[in-house]
Length: 303
Image 1 (cartoon, one colour):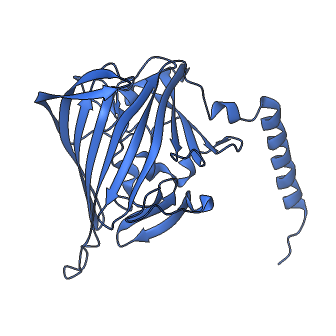
Image 2 (cartoon, rainbow, N blue to C red; image 1 turned 120 degrees about the vertical axis):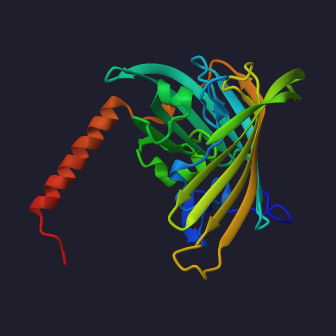
Image 3 (cartoon, rainbow, N blue to C red; image 1 turned 90 degrees about the horizontal axis):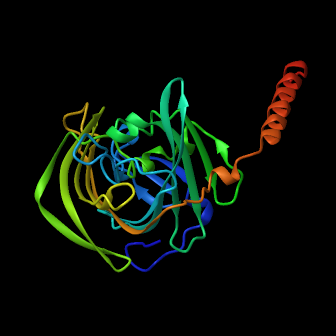
C-alpha cells in the first residue's frame, strides 16, 4: 500500500472496514486502504472491469466482453486521489461455467482483490445474466447469486456484497452515457508480446441528492485479452453537499484510477468456490439456525 509519502502499513483489520461518508465522498477502509469513494451512493455508478462486447453496447472499464469458461486476467489497479492518497492493488477477473436460472442464461464471474504482498485478499463470485454481462446493464446489481470469501475463511452467500459494492463498481460499472471509438491505436507489452489496442473514450455522469459524479474513461481494447481491455483509465470527479442550501460550500474530490493488464490465461482456479461449505455443512448450519430461532421463541429474553 502506498501513502502520499513513504509506504505505510495498515492493519489487516482496517482494510475492509467501512467508514461513514465524509464530506460527501465515501471512504472505505478496505483492501485498498482508506480510499476516497467517488460518491456516497456509488451503488449505481462506475466500475473498471475488462470491457464488454466490442463494437456494441458494453460496460465501462475492464469488462468489455464475456470470455470463454476458465479464462482469467489480472490487472494492477493504481489509485491517486486529490487528498494525496495513493495505493496499488491486484485485481483478477475469472469466468466460470454458466447455468440457466428461470430460463435466463447466466455465467459465474469471480473478482479477486489482493494486496501486492499477497497478505490480504477478498474475493467475490457472482452469477449474472449473460445479457447484463454483455451489455453492461449493471451486472453487479442484477446478480442472482453472490458469494464472498475473505482471505482463507469459509465462503458465505451475501447478496449485500459485504458492503463492498462501491469499490466493485470501479471494476464493473454500468454503461457510459456516451462513448467514442477514436481513430488511433496504442501499443502495449504483455509478457514480451506486443498488443496493438484500439482506443475507446467516454463519459459517465450520475446524479444523487446533493451529489454528482462524473467519470471520464479511456480504454485500450484488444480481443486477445479475455475480458477485452488491456488498460483502463478512469478520471473521477465528485461534487457533494451543494444543496439544498445554495450558500453551502461544495466538497470536491478528484482522482485517477488505472487498470493495466499484467497476466492472462486459461483454466482459472476458483477462490470462492473452493471455500464454500459442503452440502452437509450448509444443512447443519440451517438446522442450527432453526434450532436457535426455536429456542429464542420459547425462552424469555433478559431485559
